[in-house]
Image (cartoon, rainbow, N blue to C red; front, side, top):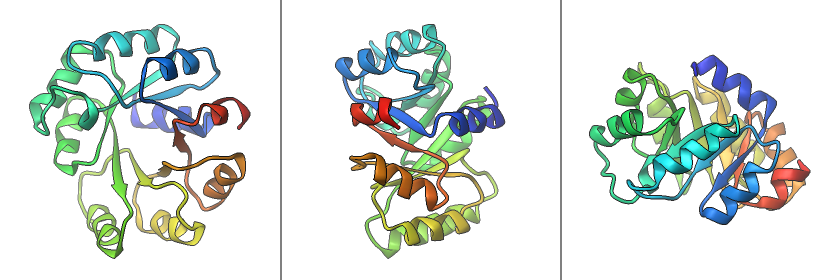
Length: 192
């Protein structure tokens, strides 16, 4: 899947299911959600989790930082590429983005927006030659003016995730210019 194809899937599916356990996976596999963020598993189970997602015709993005047994090193990206059918990775570690891109994986770089230093990190990332495909801001309930500022700074599409609890928060985030939201809130998988 190319970067353009990922952007098209997200544009058609502005609510991304983030699954953190088997129950969540089973539930989202029965929805119309087109893209799934895998936030759980280990080196023994992640390929099976991804395979089930792919069998349903959905896009699988693996949060590499949350897979037990993987380290924050390039070899972990190699593992995801070689041992799973994942379409890409999610990470908070910018150093993994070049390796994932070199291997043809899509990339989501997450930023926890805790203070002005986090905003400086987003600005620094925007100056890098090699960019992730998407930047995700957490928590997703940031003020819309702040999200709009990040959207203007970023050279790539921006999405939001975390602590989004209702449809109005989804709408507010999307109005700020983000292309999508990710959520573990199963209610939002079907009502948005």
